[in-house]
Image 1 (cartoon, rainbow, N blue to C red):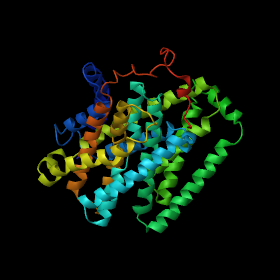
Image 2 (cartoon, rainbow, N blue to C red; image 1 turned 45 degrees about the vertical axis):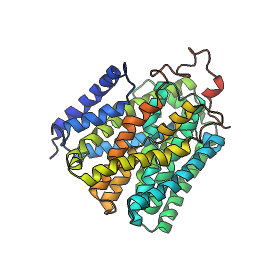
Image 3 (cartoon, helix red, strand yellow; image 1 turned 135 degrees about the vertical axis):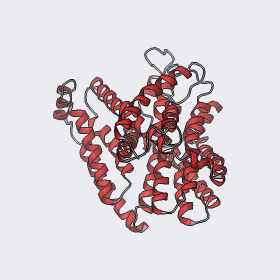
Length: 412
């Protein structure tokens, strides 16, 4: 049973301790921060010390954290960049992944519903999870970073579309129709947001930037709330609403003072990665059924199967989604970063267990394998690339070899 006061105390303490441990360990090895957040969640959860239990409070905060994670993933993407060559290569790569994933799904679970759900989960990329790693390592502002952003955006967006069509509780045709309604409303919002100079909006943003008004932050949160609620009302996956809200917020605020926009982005990152997102990863560790998984031999055997499937399904196509002529190191990094997944798998397995499509053991094995991708794949991807903040593009003003053209979204 959840003890709300203990939860409110322990979870923030973990959020403070996790980056300190990550910084300590980074002197010898670059380990993603989420590894420590999930691991500490397991430590204090029912499978460990038992201090924190899964319950309504933690679940509600976790869902908000998951929504913020997908929102920030969408907010990092320049929509126009998905229309260029990199975007087309990323879409083609996801198409190959979808075919491989469906085949893998039927090999693992012959039942059509389970196979389709597993296949959707295997096609995901945790863009919101790897984006801070790309930024901290200096990769984000390089051609590899642009290619990974495109692949990650497709890997976040396309599976959510598939979930909304096939697992919305409606027939696929009805699911497609409601998705089209959502797309129509979102498209209208993008069109309206792209028209005019919106000088009045930027004036209000500038005037309230350092006051208690905080209009820009409130506007962005309102956009997130509106699209999430719209998705829920239409029966579309709420994470699709959150991701779309991130894209829309970027368009709405475009055209203002660049320095002010940087301040707004910093505030949003503070809200997301300083509060909500850490709670999601800690809650993932708390709710993970480690003890029961260790007693289930079939589920334990499925973990390496899912791990290999995730690497092959997403990693292999990613070898060719980077720019032509890329180095072997860039292709390796692309494969392992693109194969990193977790939030989508958690969402998919939640749907699967709730609808009875997946049994608890298979769902736990999938989440366990996804955790391992976060634990292992970014570390392998960053081998030979130096410590965070030292890679090319980490600070263009201090890196004389940095290419200024890389600072703009790539349309090639």
